Image (cartoon, rainbow, N blue to C red):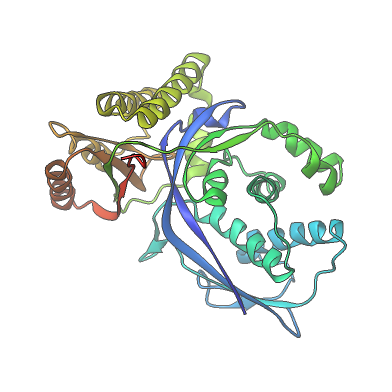
Length: 335
């Protein structure tokens, strides 16, 4: 039995702008995991704890994302002169509680998980860029309207700066050319790791309100204009620079700016709970904002001293916002 796992993700900045080619987003891996176990078997059996039943490769609407991922990997295996053999795959880790999802990118996580499991089963190693391309190809073939930023973060499992590619162009390639040809092309994305040099607490607050990212994207995409895109790109670049230079005030300023850009884009991004989550960081050495598509799910905060962290956590607790995750990040390796 081979075990694999994939993490969740949350955006720090660049949401919505990242839907356009060449834009930037800063995205953080969250070590809340989805896990898979795979082994060769006499027959195909796929089970996810999202559902109370298992399936084989006969198309099933509940398992369509997983089955389409398997189909794409089968294509890739042929390219690597391998043949798909029957296997058993079990997936656990719902990234939700009481039927309410956290908004950590569970669909992206499951796609990467299935690819990793099958590649491990066949003892095939691929680099992060190829893993990203394979996962993106699954979602593009499905007509997914996301930026693929979640995949960039999930394959890297770090704090990453992602520059988006032209998804329409790559989707057309996938329709017109074989998978091997498309995988060898330059898609025009970049994924690079960001290393903050100052110490701070990173906190994730869960509003317990469920948002459907694809619906939010459909609704808000038409509000995106060149002014928003230019401002967002500058803000993300400035935030990355501030993190790498260890400039607390600039970090707070740029996260605030990223938040204001989202508020200006649509009133629907900040629900009353997300507004309270953000407001709780006022008068502290901390900054908070909505993360991802908004309309519910999670918000994030960066706090720059222990007292601010404790105060913020208490304020969230009183507002009914659950602290989903906390991490001490960033330090200068030279000191």
